[in-house]
Image 1 (cartoon, rainbow, N blue to C red):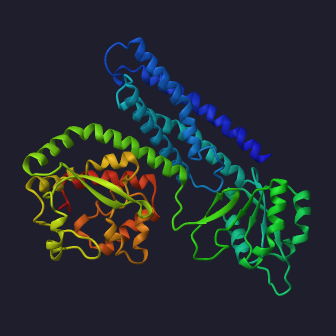
Image 2: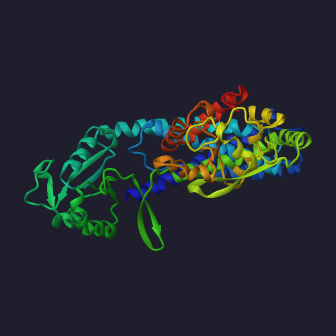
Image 3: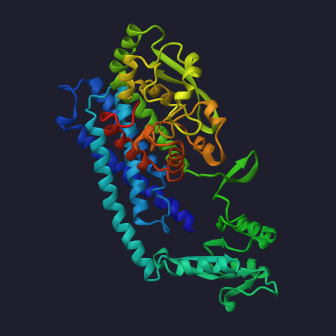
Amino acid sequence: MLREFGKRLSLIWMVIYAIIGGVVFALLATVPELRRGGAMSSSDLATLGVIGVLFTLGWPVILGRFGVYESQRRQGLGSQIARLFLANTLGALLLSALALLLGAPVTPLLPLLLGGVLFLFHLCLQLPVFYILHALRRSGRNFRNILIIGAGPRARTMMETMDSHADWGYRIIGFVDDGASEFTPSVPADRIYKYSDFPNILRDHTVDEVLVACPRSMLSSLAPIVNECAMIGVPLTMLTDLFGDHLPPPRISRFAEMSTLSFAPVHHNEVELLAKRGVDIVGAVIGLAITAPLIAAAALAVRVTSSGPALFRQVRSGINGRPFEMLKLRTMVADAEVRKASVLHLNEMSGPVFKIENDPRITPVGRVLRKWSIDELPQLCNVLRGDMSLVGPRPPTPDEVAQYRGSDRRRLSMRPGLTCLWQVSGRNEIDFEEWMKLDIEYIDSWSLTNDFRIMARTVPEVLMARGAS
């Protein structure tokens, strides 16, 4: 019943947001300052109409993919605001790309202004709902009944957690345990049921969720519990430390017809990763459009001042070590790779990294390109192809990866990027160990918000040419 109500409520929110989005788009599209050119032709109006329809239908879907309509009973206000911000930011970027692709007669300011206005609208709608629901739950209404499997320390921790968060609105029906005689329960004994009582509890009580918080020794006896929940249709949740205290949180997936639990070092939200890819595509397209003249001029300067191709292609290790061909404007003499052995003794970096501040193989033009990071601009093509991201650990060469030790290889667990924490924290002034720590820190704490922060910090770093060589 609750799930059906949740689906209807999500649909209502989607309709509301679609109406608001369509109205705001139509109003902003009529503002002369936000239109490009003079009077609009019939084709311009048709283009605006197509974009308006796609926007009106697509924007609520984007919000849904970020979980805006889902129950956020256990989520804080900050998390909900972050979801709205990221969803509206991605929507604005995709709308910008769509307007550019279709040649819409609007300025780039319209999508950004639209995203900002809708973000404020969404806040005005969501904030009252958030506070009203929390107030209702604290007063004992809008609650959900929960049954906990287990009666040990894990179960007690869950009980204390729920008691300390009255605004979540959970009521514990009781605890189900296998009743081993040598076991001393950590929860009130009068609230403990036996395994054999479980079907009757589901039948005689309203149970909205079953939470498995038992010791690992009971895992083998959970099959009847899981089967009963699946048969009746009651959601079942398991604590992620049941399979080991040092394992990372698992993710549920499928292997053919079989369900699986995937334990990965870092689990990132798939929707946010999809949004990251969307930002990459939009950013790469816009970046290439803006910097194309600069890349062409720099390539011409490279060809005129030294023999050899304008582009330098080098095999790098991408996500999970997958090799790809990275593009750069050539900044060294054409036979630089052949001459590398003769300058290995000049290496100024610790660890399996080769860098020289005054590398004799660098050409005069190449030194200028490196100082202002212009040589990296062709990598926007790598971003567009999916080999790289706008933000991520810098891609190493395969021979560097072969020398990695311990957790160093974890930096390959995320798509490499044009810029990263290392580049905005000193670049070549940082030793290898600190570089690896910064990359791992980025991966472990990754979010789209952090990506935007790093991109914002990259601009002054490039303009000031700090740490470049």
